[in-house]
Amino acid sequence: MAEEKQGNTPTPEELKAAFKAFKKRLKVLRLDEESNIGGGPLSGGRKSAIVAIEPPNQFPGGVWDELVRQGKLKRSGRGQYELAEE
Image (cartoon, rainbow, N blue to C red; front, top):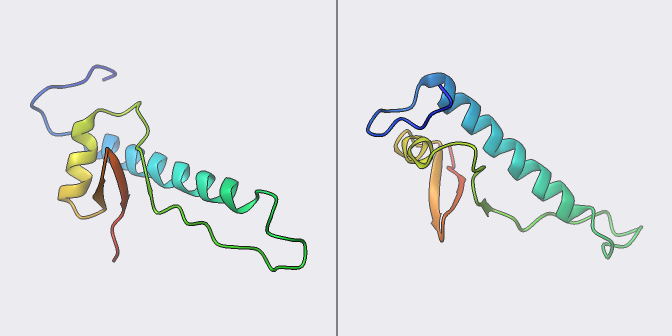
């Protein structure tokens, strides 16, 4: 199952794991940006400007294409994806 299957659609388990990994990476990157020094201790914090990220590379490209087709992600250009608005 670790091999990349050319021409086959990803399994539902692969899609679920990839989507979960994408959301976790996006969350971590946003939290990292929000925690940087410079917001000021009394400023109330600031929101991250990160919208799109490069997907985790442990999944083949076909997985991301299928998640786009299903409407869960959308392409942002330059190999980056963002969560689709629901």
